[in-house]
Image (cartoon, rainbow, N blue to C red; front, side, top):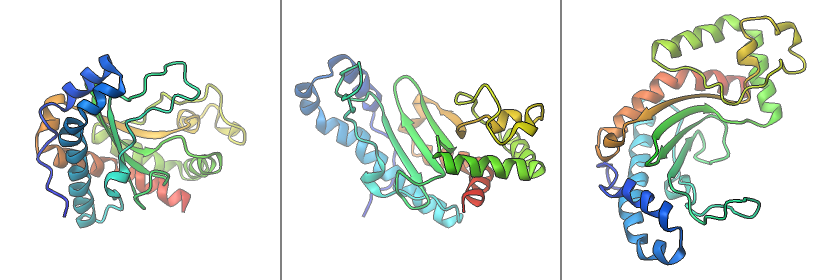
Length: 225
């Protein structure tokens, strides 16, 4: 049985700060127990709490235990930075529990900034086209969703946005929908205060964020299904 979430350990962020400096297998192995106790075990508990909460609210997001947490080891095969370890912890919840499923909640624990994000991150070309077509087909509904997100103090991120309108949507070049149709990801994000991650209340705060982001997730799932 998964333990209830009581907050990340008091040394969780300090562990990642030290790891950024050391970046060696010897140091990591010496501190692996701390990583497990203050980061991994609390994250598994948090994912378990959220899975139960979402099930009770009929929000189709769930985790698959430790498999929902991203590996701390970096893939350095094609990277110029050969640092072997990530200096943050990331985990994802989806409808199936698989990291590869469309429509997600992503959790990021990092000394340089913790946050929760929800939506559709860099979908494959065919799925991206479906999302864009759904926006173009029902502009009124999409605009209503954007307004609802704004009321919940959320807005779509514009970091991954084309400079030109994508092929097939030229008719919307000068439309108010142009910005949304140029997006390559449909994501809303909210910062999590560093002091909050040690609190059991973090689970409720994330659940509240997902409730406010739910209209975006529902819209995308309907478009893709």
